Length: 100
Image 1 (tube, rainbow, N blue to C red):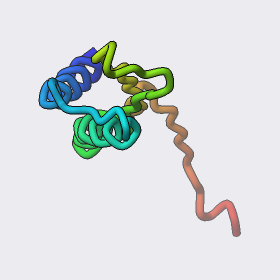
Image 2: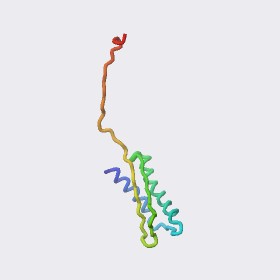
Image 3: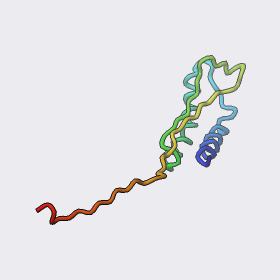
Image 4: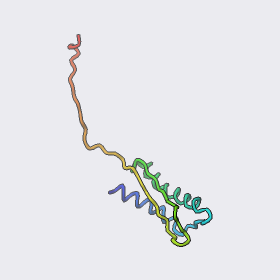
C-alpha cells in the first residue's frame, strides 16, 4: 500500500504541473509525448530510490479529441520490488579425514 501511495502522490504531483498545458491538435502525438516524459520523471525517481523495480507512464492518443474532451487518460504501471519472506538453509558437516 505504501508503494501505491507513493507512486500516486508523485505522479499526481507531476501531473498537476501540467494542468492547463497547451496541446497542439496538429501535433497531438508530439505534445502528449512531452507530458508523458514529464510524468515518467516521477516513476524514474521511484526506481532510483528503489521503491519499485521498474515502471512507466503511457498516454494513449488513439481516439483522443483534446479540443472537445480536454482530458488525457494516463496509464501508470510498475513492477514492485521483491521481498524475502523465507530462507531455506542447508547445513552440512564435512569430515576432511573421510576422503583419505
